[in-house]
Image (cartoon, rainbow, N blue to C red; front, side):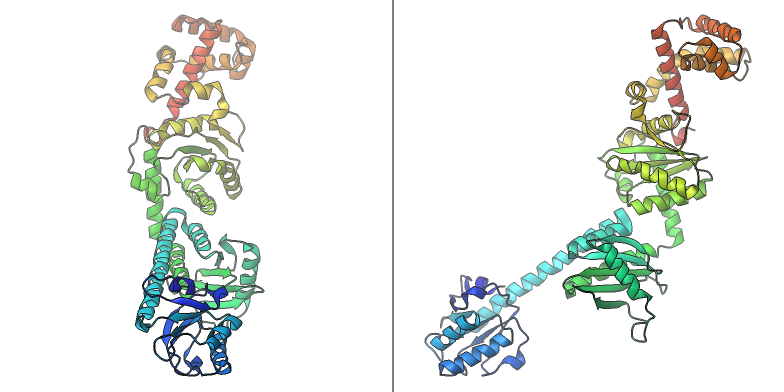
Length: 515
């Protein structure tokens, strides 16, 4: 409630007669008082209401009366014109203009209780709006805690308070930060925490200290007696009581997140792995609620990432969780022997190279990697085959390849169903049957054909690649022509065979539940 809004109230009939330049002052309460010096009973921001019984009769006395109100921080003076005075005295008006104190003329028909009710109703409504804002922000932080963990809560609190917010570990290292000048604030808080606690600060859950231009609040983070760290909130103005309530809610969310029991984390990890295996299965149907629990929008696209040479599964999973935790991105993860498969939102696929590099550094391994084309959650089994095909498309490791890099191969086979791939690969079945019937050596006719196609039809190079004599290579190629009734001298036939081999390769990768 401001002075201007009060004067504009349609039912009160108030008139502003002085101090027009300060009508934006906020009225925090309305107080009827008839003392010559009411200031001992005022705290600032009030609308003082008087009938004029003790304001004095001379201009000097009236100026002194208004000066005392101004010095006490009163928002405005409401002067009744139906009891002691028929109109606001000239001395009060002159003093109001001189001191910048808004003076309101109250008509005889308007009782002070009506003004008080108007002020209280507005103050109460404002408080309710403030409380609702806090409730709304609490809900936002709760959703962020579920979706993005501690970094999400920190970011939401920083936005709500227009403040710099930092989570510090017990060793004063920064775990999460949001807001301007976070590095300087983190350093300042770290220095403050390094001071030995005094008798008065040892058991305090909250501390406030000032820097050069603002205030910083430090809150202890603990859901159990064990201290897990501190939450620092720094901004130019001190926190209001409602702001402190929001900070307390953030402290609770972050403390719980930092103190999750190991069994809960293990159960969450198992659920994440089960959901990952389900979405990577061919034509899987997944409850959208599970996807939302792990931060995904079921309507948006996702990509599959395959990382090879990851080593023992438990260590690889733990380090992958740590890396993805620092990036604050939704993810699903499943592992198999020497391989990690991830599902990431398509709009976060740019983080793949960061994940690959950071995980390789942690595991001290040269990792291979592949990433699929974006797809829906109902078709990520195909995405897994794409990612694995990209991962295995080159001899060298230590970099991530995109399935899109495979050119024509990705365009022709990238969106094929299993049935379509099986149809393309079916023409290789006679060669399989021949190898089984003839008890052929380890390098059979399909391996011979693949080497020949890799060598662009150069017999000597193909023979050298698989370690056989060129005459043996010619005899095997002749046998392939006879069995498949396909002329390998034709570019069309070679292309058809090459696609069949690639389709067979994609099918052999399969989804986790197909292996």
